[in-house]
Length: 413
Image: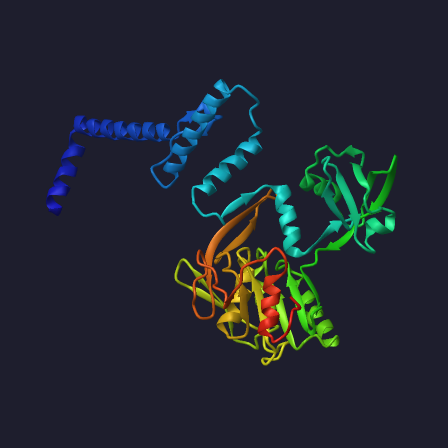
């Protein structure tokens, strides 16, 4: 074999014509290759100079999709009778449409302004004036200042109608989310409110302060003062601190012989906040099992030490709107034999989302895991069955009445 190769090479060098044919063939092959490369990187000028074709790798599908998208929008620009949305709006629409194709209701995209409000709710605080906003029948924004908050201290009265913010008129009917965005801002920076009070217009300058959104409220039960009632609205960054304060105050009022934890309508929130809440009633041990698509898992455990001794009864009120992080707390206490669920079957949201903040302030929620109770029960799509089913009653709080009956107390009904 080696001798034949050597012989052929020697013969080519000895014949100038064959050497020329060899060079011509090589040049032709290079030219064809170069032309192919050039075609692969051809530009569609109508698409703004973007590559129409690329090498046949994973990018090929993306290039075809971009070409199809450009083709569709070319038709829309030509035929659509109306105003074409901005490039940013089209980008947001494309993201939303792509995410919807995943067919997961908990994986979704949020534009910048609602993403800011969402982050504030989860953190439990924001830069604001400390006032509740509601709409009257005419669609006007009515202010109710919180006690000892900036709005009240600056002179805002209950019932004042908000007319303008920093000179910008509030539309009627108003969008409360938009008005909220107008009022909130940097802590320490003033905002000028123009309000209608009776028959006059009043300008009030309010310096924004850090406003905390309470997630927990508490009181001794009126019908049984030795029982502590704790309402958890959501699970935020403030919940653990508020729950500690609630239990300390109830203990000081001798309303700690039993606890009724009201989770009705609680949509969830931060997983860590729910795990921390469980730690007030569970002394160590599993609270939550988080399972990932790759087969790995993470186990969340309660901290050592509790506020409520093991012998203190705990009853949790739940309904069809008790969801997500609220189900984490309810499921953990139910599985560990630490709490009795009273009410209706819970919502059944057992998936966990990561919130990714994008470069323009928007946010992308992505489902990355599902959670299971300490006994490895799946909650997603199933919910938690109550230990004591109760139907709601329009005349009285049937859930609370049944909880008190289980504790051997009379609700006076």
